[in-house]
Length: 103
Ligand SMILES: [Zn+2]
Image (tube, rainbow, N blue to C red; front, side, top):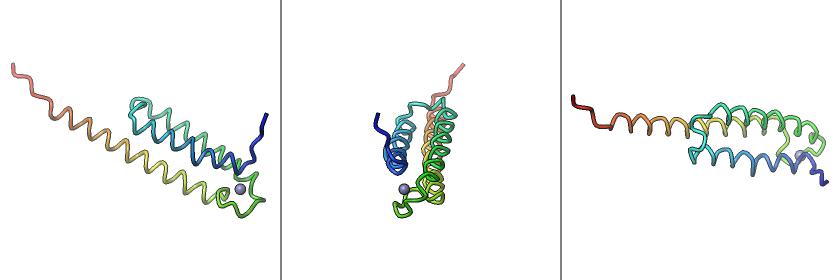
């Protein structure tokens, strides 16, 4: 079994796992399961801090500082909020544009 060093694992989180979560949200895959995405993201964030602590010796990789991790996840959450807000307003728009029933 190949064990990746903390830096490489963080890179996987930044460059593969989180972008695929954002993609899922954009694809509207989990519109009704937003809590699933949010808790998944929370777990990744916790994991990232753990990895960052393990890697704090490497110093100059630029990925492992708690501040970098915090900024990254803050941006990710803002982006997801934006996606969801847009989807919600599209949804409202659809409802508003539905023809009224005439009795
Ligand atoms: Zn590192």
